[in-house]
Image 1 (cartoon, helix red, strand yellow):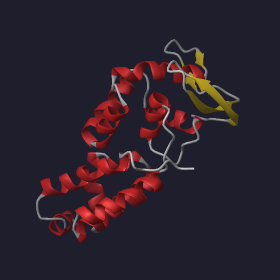
Image 2 (cartoon, rainbow, N blue to C red; image 1 turned 135 degrees about the vertical axis):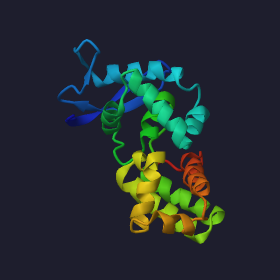
Image 3 (spheres, rainbow, N blue to C red; image 1 turned 180 degrees about the vertical axis):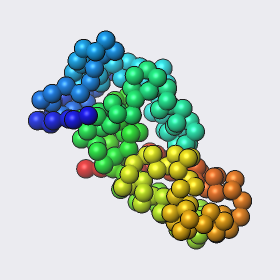
Length: 206
């Protein structure tokens, strides 16, 4: 899916607030009947559908902070024709490629400024260092490195054991032993730290 950028334009949605998108030389979005759709039309449609999934910024943060509810939200959006590829295209249009898909939804729904993954990772390390032991910190820092480079998919529950293998040279047993000895504890660590990525105190990227 190609996106050709020209210049920034303002789009005012039904809440009366403006969002900024990149003007495009070619369309990226399509109606279900196969006819082309402008970026503004797609944003307006997404804005209109998001209340079916969450009613407030706080509810979005809560849903996005846990791997299971985040996956359910993304699947629900995909079922309504707002799949991953289209959200990534919108991410490009709002000049947020270095941000999280959370920022796409938060920007469209609530006009929040995007925050880069680097800024989120730097912020969450403060919480990690005060709430987890040294071996857990090392693993979570490894997870954050992948998150910064690859995006939100690196924090899906199905990514946990591949990440453990990468860090511990394919030895899941060593990883489990290092991180507490119980798989459920590792799952709780992996899922539990994620809520700190989406706190209100994270400053918007410039």
